[in-house]
Length: 390
Image (tube, rainbow, N blue to C red; front, side):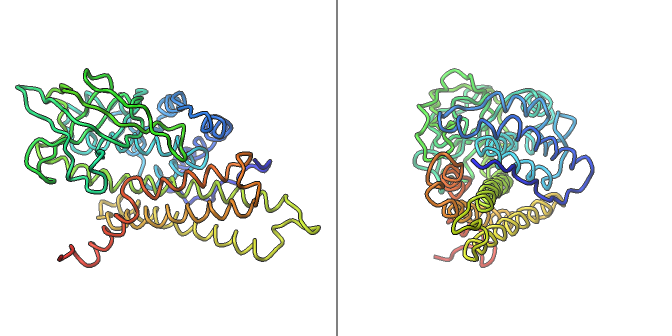
């Protein structure tokens, strides 16, 4: 790793409060997250104590109402917090995004009684959440999920397997989408399932290319009993709840991607300024200067795109198309920027002594999660040209 500290991003924030918030996040990231990131990712250690700290600091419920312990921050601010956290360590930034996603169903569709009973602990009480939509045979085609919830008096019995669950096995609660009716999207309902529910078990975490500190695992529901009071929304409303959550979640992934890209650019620039060849810093050579310029431009364009989508959301306007565009562009940009960062460092970039190889491996997953980038292109095209006619 280089000795130069990353320079703070020149952010345009709406209030003095939000500027103070970002300064706090930057301080926590530099003191508590970044110094241990490489070692803990290499060992596969999940930093649960960091999420506890973030919860105590009020950073796990930023976009939610203050009456339930949320921070009442606009998405424009919340996403920039995610970017700062992801720049320090993607396991943390993406983990906060996933937690927010897990709270989205109850926060947006729960009854007042449900929100009062559960949201305070979820948003600021030290709990950590996960989101259960995908299954072994239902990934991009999420509406074909087969996990079932069968009514039994005042309870529901959930049976099935969920896959690719971030925080699987370590979360305190799960927002679970299960089939309660007909085939297709209209037969799906959402539930809030406690992490210690009887019959709920997690498989051994997946062995992944990157983000080794973030557990990703299958979850098995073997007759898990959940009271109807933990049903979120109406029966059959689950898929629309899931899609609304994914629109917001895609913006979280976009912000995390720009954080990873910014971290890679910071490392590449610091190295290029320090490394000398032929008697000059390699940053003096035009070919490399142009690479750095292109990297910075991709990052600024991605940041502008996700913030534009966030401001639409904050204004109560439709933002689904823009969220898909932001997720697509920002994650592709992160892959390109981290690849170029490895190239700037040359042989050193290919070693674990510098973080750019880890950032490159981590960037790849962002093109896949929350809907692959091929799915994002389908979403964008449907907004432009309407549904496919074939």
